Length: 340
Image (cartoon, rainbow, N blue to C red):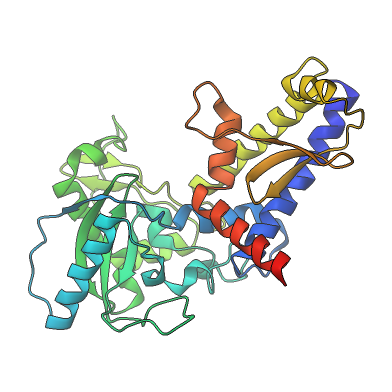
């Protein structure tokens, strides 16, 4: 590795933290940094970005738990929610306030570090309310009834509607059993082949305690053993999938730094053809997306997205770190700042 590569890897790594911290601020995410080894703005941002439901049309598939008897207002709220999910409406206002306000990967209390149901089983929960949102409100009125659902890129599986009840409602085994029953092909990918099931099944209280303690419990169904479809939690009760994703992002940033340091690379050739001599490169957040910015000249080399074939990790870096819905919010925020 050349000296230039080492310098840019170090610089881009610092830039990555700055980009993540800026995104946390733009979206007003709680980030207290109470626990030193968890005070990573990238992990905090990715917890939000991965839980955020991208407003896009999806095919709505109801489990065999539907239809069911519900209070009239909750039935209407469910129908409205189904229409929003199908048409691509923004349903994030119906998520838990923990999405931005109470969950924080660096919180001192484990149960507040993420949505443990989502981290463990990959299940979202949405409040069912017909009460109109007040102007400027970030979240809908809270409800005593919740829709548990599996959100995929192009489909959403409605698992069940249940009363909010106690905290154990989010670790109720019947939720995951319903997924096994109605979406066996989806659950099959998580089978741990060759393992024998335990003689003791876990109840909701035990599952909740394991999650908070940073311990993953396997899932069992009809004599087979499965890993948690959400990826489970780390020893710190943060989502395992996010640790792996952040590690991958760091690798892609290092790859980007090496490309920028390559004297025969695409970026260098662009600068030479433009007559630019300075080489003060930084990974930057712009209203048009992520870019390698040459600060002295202001030249920006925008990163590709995943709709272009052959761009590999650099495109995934852009798509994961700054999804298109987040890019739009960044552009809007910058425009408002410039107009003041």
